Length: 432
Ligand code: SDX
Image (cartoon, helix red, strand yellow):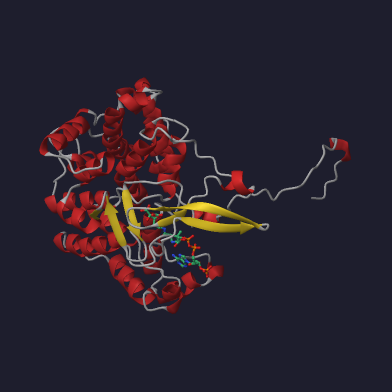
């Protein structure tokens, strides 16, 4: 394989280095392109642009492969837990017994938010979207940890990372309880990560929530499957903010905002809203599929399609299987699951979706499980954010640990007015 790429511009010939990753992904390194040629590249939506080299997650979109630190998602889904996988993503190896115990203890010691943080919840209206609360409160919590700023950012990374992973759960549960006018339920040190979250969400002062092992496992699996996904929109946002040497909480709060969009993490909420609307209209999905193919309908088959996967998202396969298991266990028959399966079956046979290589992604079935567990729809993307937190932290750490890290500052091609001059207000015409 050639180690250089040849570029001919304006009669000049340039040699650009070729970079090859450990999975043989190839890139033309254009770090010196502008200095050498005066040209920049333009790539709307970064579909062809690598922003960094990373050792955290590998995706092969054509093959439908996803690996965290080289371990296939299918193996982790079957054998690991969310917290063990979080450790793997952040520190680069599966933890020993001692490492896992210390990590778990750190999460337990940091599961409560600062008591004064509770006043902030009073300021949000009951119908405030929990993603708005989550990003605000993650940023607000940094005010209670001045040690986050500056050099301490690095020396106390482990405690900050544990605080963030542990407290994102507490903030989310408190936001839910506040929205329902319920008293907050504090975390219990005896409970492991996901069980504690369900306890904080659904226990009552007078009665503990019954923790069914299969329900805890199903939600833990959802968190694990969402834990990282290379340079997706929200992770790239976290890296963008981290590259300015902003602290971990500020970077994560920015990630929450990016994740909220319906084209990204907000899709799991949009999928259920789509399925509910199809169900309410009495359509079996066929009418909706026709609309989703019509650009003028303003509708898309939410939970389908992916910038990288041009094959079935491996996470969707795992979640679809878990759907059937959890609904059977809870003896729930959800008509929305039947509609989802019908939509998938129809779309996978339809040339429009086949030609564009549109398959179910992680969001297509995840909402069905969350509904079955009793998680309200407005919390779906919050669940995604809790799951994605270790991946954001792992990417933040790559920047923190990189002595050559530079601020992310893309270029642009300017297409605005050429040289112009100031016009006094009395001489300006109304027409524009
Ligand atoms: C996540 O990046 C990640 O890794 C994200 C994620 C992660 O773990 O972080 O995997 C999580 O965000 C999953 C994606 C969730 N979003 C959705 O499910 C929303 C619906 N899907 C899309 O809007 C779309 O597929 C995207 C946003 C996911 C990808 O968009 P792209 O790569 O920019 O593709 P595109 O919009 O340019 O579409 C290409 C063509 C277009 O048709 P043509 O102009 O070629 O005729 O495919 C069509 C699109 O109209 N198309 C769809 C469609 N998705 C793409 N048509 C109908 N329904 C859809 N869902």
